[in-house]
Length: 495
Image (cartoon, rainbow, N blue to C red; front, side, top):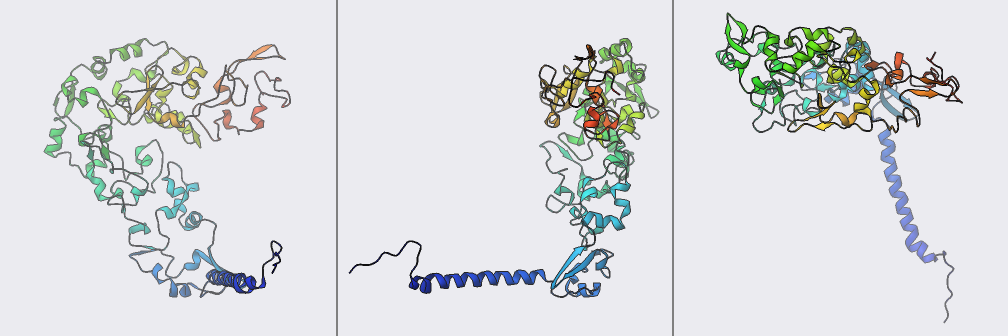
């Protein structure tokens, strides 16, 4: 008996009735079963458009039961939330688009738009990174306490202060009391003042002597009987942790580090420091004769360097090479307050804001205008931003050097430095654009140009740090290029 072959793609009635159809029905049932809970989930189980806060709390009583509750919670759910009903779907949303914007409607003093100075980053973007909006067992509705180890301390979610202490190193016991022992996280102000830069309750030494008695015999002995009551503790000690005993700073002056105090000091007399030489400058010159000669004989002298060395340098140590006090930038602002206004701008050149003015300028005097480390401005800038930049690693220290070893920078600094794709002096800001003096064919003259033709060296309110705080657009290019279709048409001297 011959059997007919069924055309491909056609199934028998038996396979439909006995196999595929039941499976299809089963799949549809499962999909419908999954869809129903989703529809139910979109519907708030108890609300309607006329709901009030009391109704909210009948289900959300957990938002009121804690040691600390948000003032709005007991009777003000609708101060922050709104109920939206669309047909049979009820949704609960914030009354403004973002949680931070909602917080600032009441906490106007925390709004970054109303604050000048350095702000703790989460304060400006995401209040809920630190706070619970409803209730908490911690003060100020914090998600976790500000004390304890890695897993329980809120601050250690982002910071690792005191966590990884090297063998033989030291850790400040104050960390165990909680970060708020020394810090007020929402405190802000002039970033060049340490009190505000690090959100401290107050600056050292006042902060330190709240816990450390300056008349304690053990502390007096540790300081070899030298007067220290009004000294800046942070110049010698790191207030958090150190790779050395006694919380010593990373950068220490050689005689101090090696406990050779008598190189510079005689025994104190009547509570005052007595030096081995007639004055500070003479004492420093015993070892730093080269710097003393540079200060005295420089073609372009730095008036600030004519004072005692300790006006700018701490004689014991500091947070950066050179031991500038109170810091590598703030030390210069004492005499150059006009530069402080630059640091208030939105975009600041890192050497001017963090590394220190001595990155680009000779602090002891030099041969170039403005005490620049190079006579040619482009050579100065390309020391970091040029394709041939070649920082040298310092053996045994987390540092690199530039300018023939005269300037020391953090070892990871160059990981964030933009490097220009220059070749034969061309290539920025566009391919074949010159960065130095260029011949203008139509004028038959050389157009003088360097990095400062387009850029400000310290800061700007616009990205790119273009001169006069101009925006990075074609209007800026038209300062020199009168005709956008003919880039050889350059205006000598600009507008």
